[in-house]
Amino acid sequence: MVEKHRDHKMADFWYGGVTRGASWELLRQEMEKNPQADRVVVSTELFFAQVNSVHNVFRHMLDELPGHNIKIVAYLRRQDQFYSSFYNQDVKGMRMWHKSADEFYNTHQVFTKNYYQILKAWADVFGSDNIIVRPFVTSCLVGNDIVTDMAAIVGAEGLHSGSVNENDALGMTQLAIKRAMNRLCKNKDHNEQLLEVIKKLVVEERVKNTWYTNRKTYGHYRSQWERTNKKIEAEFCGGEPLFADGFPKAVDMALAEENRDILVNFVTGVSKLIGSKKESDFYRLLAQSALLIALEYGFYEEIDSTVKAGLVAGCG
Image 1 (tube, rainbow, N blue to C red):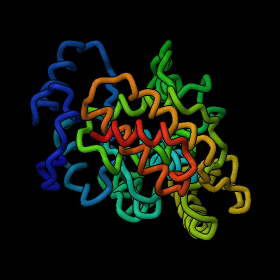
Image 2 (spheres, rainbow, N blue to C red):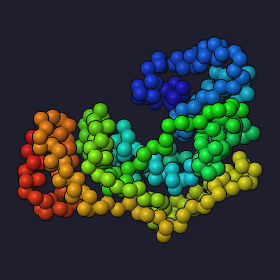
Image 3 (tube, rainbow, N blue to C red):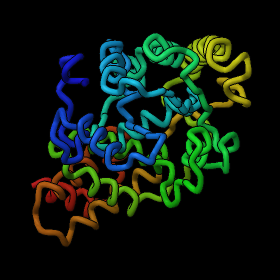
Image 4 (cartoon, one colour):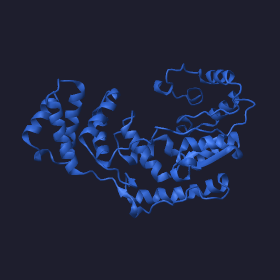
């Protein structure tokens, strides 16, 4: 649907081996195999990630499911948490984002529309009465579990997320290291290997209320989010608060700040790691990333000469 209505070719990994254009027919076949089922749940990240020019996409969905009573269940994470988490995951994940958080927020399509605008686009096609908004807050979910909560909404029982956990975010310094690697990496197949090296060499606790730009920018966004949530509460929540807890004040946000000692230890660790390895593109990438970090954070001249020699040799 995205390719048809938005002229945007989706990457192959979104299809999971399913032939392009076959999904709706496969869904109908699955429904026909299970005639006793009176409810069907369809979920994908793309329902949320596609925010521009989506009315035709939604109408297409409606046309593919004639005669069905369709409900849209939207789980919304508090915006400050969503912004921080989404940036962290884009640096960590297969997109391998390497630029600043500011540029990320100003260019990624997800942030071109606010929550209210996204919900309104769905409501314009499916009707406001068919939009169910839930806060993605563990304490607010049935059984403190998102799958159990969804099951309760659709009238199913005995479902839970099991071993499926929230994405494991990188710490502030780990994220800085991954961004440096992303700048130099030309092969996305190396992504999981890079994460393994970071987690092996860098132990870092996550900091609550992390923000990746500055407090002034956060304050600007915070005001926008508060206005947005009031509109959502009025139209989709019956006037009830969307989130029980308000947004932290700017002064309470922990600004992303790399730990210099951890960076030095990482660079030293990379030198030791590649010392006994055969030459390869991957270990060359590690060496180049470590040198980039040492130079950009201003401690290249301070590291041991054997570490420098090992990294330089590793660069090939």
